[in-house]
Image 1 (spheres, one colour):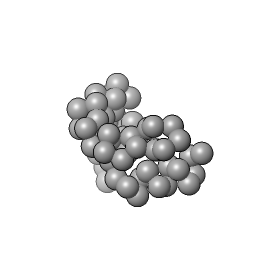
Image 2 (cartoon, one colour):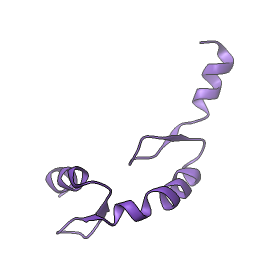
Image 3 (cartoon, rainbow, N blue to C red):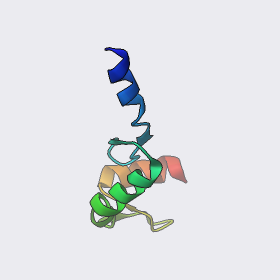
Image 4 (cartoon, rainbow, N blue to C red):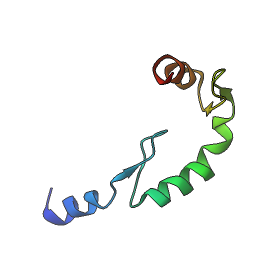
Length: 67
């Protein structure tokens, strides 16, 4: 990898914690999450805090490790 490619990769240092997609800023992560994950996240809700998750497995992991 050359220096230009490395610098370009470093520009994308904000990650979506739902899908792992990289963005240039946290503001873009939030925009992405609002547009791409909001509807899916409402499908599986945590019984304890009512937070929504896109998959049943993500909800179970949250419940087991987040509470």
